[in-house]
Length: 342
Picture: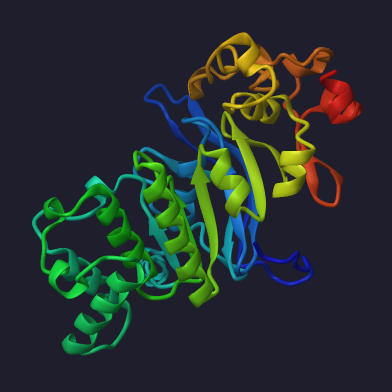
């Protein structure tokens, strides 16, 4: 994990009050991501955590300028090294995507073109952003595949995606994302549907690639185990908003928001789970974007013993408690984490 860094310098990536959604045929505005603020420093790992539909992937697609209609950025800012990306023209974004901003997409089964050889696809990423001759590009492809742990990389580079296993395809996607040594790497659920051994290997591959290039990484995941092992800082998202953020130690050792607490309690092996014979599950389910409640989006599912009336009427904002640990929950801020759940 990286050391704490000064916030006096321009961050590598800065998202400020980003709001994303779409407009229905009747003219109603539906918000998917609401006033999200994130910050990534060079060499740092920021983990976005939350249930499906919380807005994690949509936020990062907006960073890359890859939102597809009818999704659009309603307001807010995305800055890469101080340069505004919201509203940037497609030519500018194409120069950045793949070169300075790399993306490991969620599903390796569909991230690769099935009718083109794997090596050709990785080579294309090099050809777009670097002036290399064909021989040098092919040699670099073999080096990249070797770096991500592909056996017989030269031979494998000539194979088609269907000839590779799921874990190998994910390695190929990582190689493609890291081909041009991007400054920011966004990994969207990179270990989904893989067994734990392959998961560990892939995370080692990502760590090695980042160490070589010095890239900062945004890791989108549901796996709190991965977060504990690899994160420097964590942002917990629910119903399109960041509800708690801080260093990995602050969020794990002093989790205060009821949603964060619920996620932690749902882990197998937590105290009380074995005694009851089953794992804890947060009651209810996340609301659809068009049906989010007024006030706190988590209020209908919240088990906080002293919920305030304002939870049902006012949307809570992130307020820093100490050393950058911020919580969007007025009742939780009124007492310590342990007192709130005693």
